[in-house]
Length: 85
Length: 145
Image 1: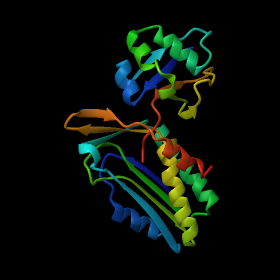
Image 2: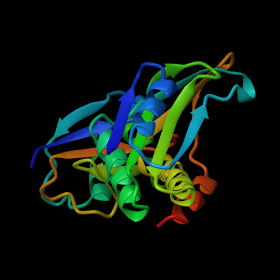
Image 3: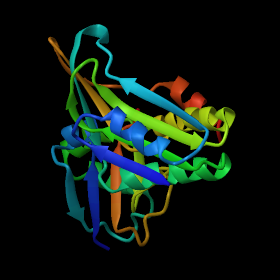
């Protein structure tokens, strides 16, 4: 199932791109699984996703915990805790 | 009436006040956040998640409008690079009486800090750094849930 990934702030800088389209295998069931799968694909991903306590996620533009299932997601964003206002 | 704007241009507070005062209510409360010059910051950069940002701010404004029976709510948030002293965010709430307007305004600024996808990056003479989220902001937002 192909899905659009988006990265923001230092996660974007660390991964080295603002977004990418990926097609993870069916065993990748949650956001956390997706991060594990991506981390195994490149050192830049592994470095960006090394400390999960510093990461937050959104599926189809709604905040979700990292344990959230990704089935049916069109767009998944990975980013640090927000700091607006 | 809900008004949510995410823009790279400076925030025109006078024009925003004209809009909310035209709502015909007795009470307007507002908050304006400015770029601080703390720690030698020369430029503040705001990144956001286009689409999700607007949706998150509209949801917050609608929730506040319902809870405090607001006649209008405005959130204007700037993105991109800005200088110390410039406005980052403007929030205004309009109600029949002051208590509702003031509480709704406080809730909106507290919640948007932790529930809207913006990220701050500070530039100083020594380089640039992403601003870390503060636990105190989570606590401030939690009291309105």
